[in-house]
Image (tube, rainbow, N blue to C red; front, side, top):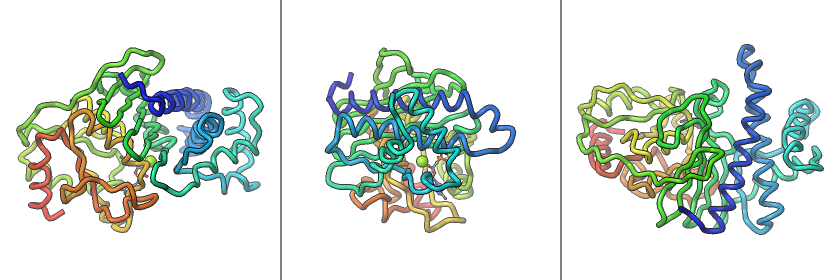
Length: 323
Ligand code: AMP
Ligand code: MG
């Protein structure tokens, strides 16, 4: 298992955030689903970033945190009800929480990336969270160790909607490990050994607007594959690949939003989870992802993740379809 102080700290912080998100889901999501109301995910996002940032404030005061959220809008009069909810959920776990301390904790995440920093997506896959499907709390240390978590998967990587969820953690040079949330029974994850391109299982976003579905179809054809892609929200896809339950994942820019750039917190945790399980993650030219360009992967046009064996075939197929 992974024992470095960084990893232990990150796992504890993420476990606590997961428990809090479950509280929010239990008490707010069911009613909201019927009204297409996005407010529960807003509460969960802010509350999860607040509770993780609070741990940084008390245990890691000098560490830099680059988070997806900031408290700007939350301080406005129009957000009063949201802020009250966030304060209530965080306060159930951190006694003495006030709306001011919540905003201060969330704003720790406004820091700019430095040589060594943490990046956090408090609820990755917000649409999955609202549907009651896959989402992940993704926390990664950018330097050489990174950690992540993905609720709603069984520990062996199968999709387990409504299940306990699991923690997936990886550390450079020490592997990718998983255990069910609420347990401490860790086991090592390894990518699958499938080497025939036509047999590759492709993992894809549920949301077609987050990728390029047409190009993805052409890619599957170029690989000779016939299987329907497996649709999942969030970086849980990378955990499934790491667990050997899928072989390929392409993240291609949507034709409707060609200027979109991947944010570091959407890729950092997922990439080390795949690499340390024996897989490979690169850009469309086969180069390692560059996390030193600020809050986005500024020069990136897409991401390919594979079980390693199929990486060359994936890059060749990309070149063939002109992606
Ligand atoms: P997924 O769960 O795979 O659909 O990915 C969710 C992530 O996609 C969100 O966290 C967003 O940061 C990101 N996202 C939002 N809009 C786009 C877009 N147009 N293209 C690519 N990714 C996006
Ligand atoms: Mg995200």
